[in-house]
Length: 371
Ligand SMILES: Cc1ncc(COP(=O)(O)O)c(C=O)c1O
Image (cartoon, rainbow, N blue to C red; front, side, top):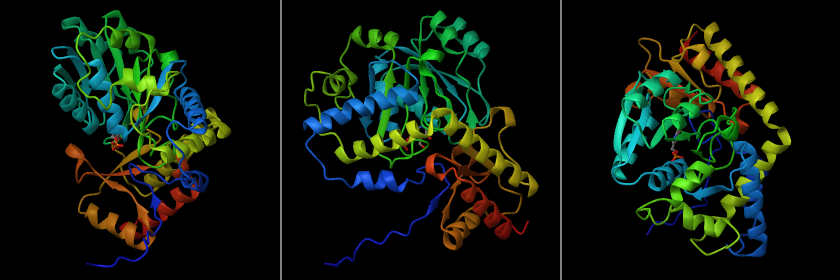
């Protein structure tokens, strides 16, 4: 039997699609001793986390909580609770994560209709309306910030269209929450989920979700039981709400970390935080343009949190990422799905969104690419 030494992880600068760097304050909080999942101290913390999540989601939704699991658990909770077998679901597909939605909704028995656009483009409210006019859908799902392409799907004017046709709007906010405006109430989004490891600035492991009044009503009107026991929001709400009924053992330390990360967002202020993410993205884009590197997404649809950089002809994109890791300790991502081999994905999210990281990456790319 091998005897293993102490864990020796070399810290990296995480500038990929996630996870992003975690502030020492959050890491320190993660290491506090766990208490029981029904300990009065933890029950207080649960209320604080929910309150802080309402703040970042910009919502008054009572049903707002962190699902135990990564962003995909948030996606799974959304489809498991709001889809019943035979329901019609319309999904705007223009990237890897909307493809995942199609697969997932189908597994919960939905009759899935896809509205396709090339990867890197977004949908207009008129396109959604045209699709709903042909055939209404109980649920319309869109990815707000598509991490595979770097495109930002506007949501502000979509909900009214969806509601006019009797549906609910579901938004994936994994790469937007905490890094750019997500205004659940003002935009009237019915269901949204995220992950802790990107712009929120905590390690991976929790999936904040928020459910508005229309969606809560739909949940109470379900004809069948939610087919996923663990992610049933009604029973989860009994643990996170006043009943405090045991559901599962919450990942205590991850909730400590989430509380601290959210508290840091509150301290910074949402507007200041969004401005920081935008300023550093702009700095990065300007540097790329100076090096004559192309960006995959048109400026008006570009995410400030995740940039897709076109790999120049003749360059081995994997070799570049390897060099970045070996020489500079910097992680960036490669392309996913349809963009595999064609782009690099650079995340400037949460604590990773700092000028020194932008300057380091630009200098490293200049050296490696000889530009
Ligand atoms: C837009 C989007 N949705 C969903 C997910 C899935 O989240 P996770 O990998 O945390 O399960 C990701 C992860 O990168 C994502 O970027």
